[in-house]
Image (tube, rainbow, N blue to C red; front, side):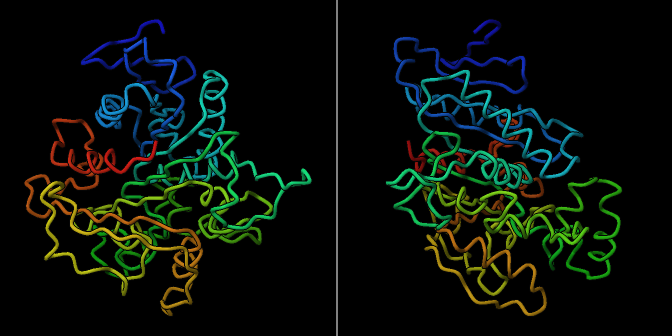
Length: 352
């Protein structure tokens, strides 16, 4: 590829349609690269937010993957709404697949709002499995009958500090301090700052007889087979900050009700010092528990139809703790180096 930059055995180049591709410079092994990893940035972000992690991925799996850091929704384009951004990302992925015909598998790694954008995009890209008689199967969340993501095997769907339950619930946006008056005011004014995306996050987009977008995204419907798409992945993983993330609360990023948040203080992990708790949650639709926020509970219940690996992270002893929302993705590399062990954990668990 022209204008590629080579550093530490890793090639990277901006592509004309937007975004940045990262791959190994080991040409002799390039023929075995069949796994596309799409990295999606958060609100007001850009492709370089994932630069450090993307290079680590390629160094770890030089002969297996190519990483694409999306930039179709750069900067203020992230204010256009989760659905609009999801459509753009879906088109970007289709172009990537057509440009790389050797691809057989696909994974997503997304930060913050990018995780919601990726969930919408895979709904658009999902292709149901075929029955033996050639008909499309019904949309059931069964691991033995998986669909594909635009013809590719779905491997890992990983989100990092993503507000899966939105930002409206109590303490879902920590810098509002859980004060109900502040949270109500934010719900009314957020669209002035964050546009349609803000309405989607605060679940105030229930207009024209439609339920909020995030509510529609926890089920299969006429719009998209959102949950079937999510269930098509072999792994679904959420990385969440337990504290000091001023933008995304622990419950919303870990897909839990407040009563389900674990005690993590005594958990010790010598290999990954900032990983403070891990659990595997089997697919299990739950009855409502949060009588004060039925909508939030519907989101938890809907997403619980799929199994999840939940990884809780804490930077409470780090001098960078107040930047936890960025540190958890090791944004900027050396600038947020405390988050490197989180990326290492992601790599060690990654399914090729």
